[in-house]
Structure formats: C-alpha cells, structure tokens
Length: 88
Image (cartoon, rainbow, N blue to C red; front, side):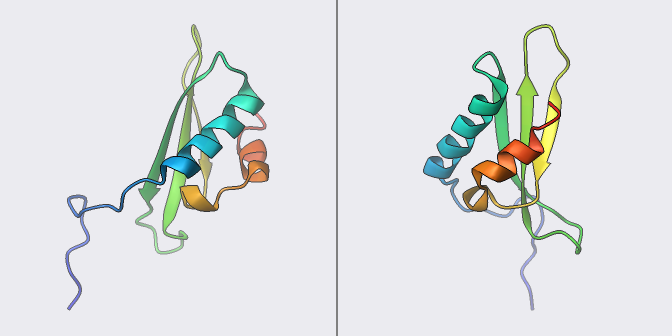
C-alpha cells in the first residue's frame, strides 16, 4: 500500500549548489537588476516528468514574469535556462 503523497509529506532538502548555479545562469541571461524566486515542485499530472522548476522574475516597475523548466533543479543546464528565459 502506498503512503499518502499529499502536500504535507516531507520533501527532500534543496540542492543549494544547484540552486546557486541556476540562479547565476538566470542572472547572466536577465541582468543583475532582476529579483528571482526559484522553486522546485512536484507535478501532479501523470504526463509530467515528476519535479519541475519554476522561475519567477521580478523587476522594479514591471509585472512578475514566470518561466518553467520541466526538470528537477539539479538536472537543469545553462541551455535549459537560456531557452526558458528567452522571451523574458
């Protein structure tokens, strides 16, 4: 019997090194004036790969923009970031 996998289950710790690597690539693409929130979430859709990474980009005086990479944080490459943030 599978354990309940709802929103209250314990998540594994974030990979701080991967987070900083992805943050650096984002700032390289967007410029240093952007504030970022990077979140790794589990997709509930069976067609999803499991963990996805969402990037919120906040710039002074502008609406918040979002990008999604359909990979876990640790598996993201610089190319993934460049493609995800291409239009932001």
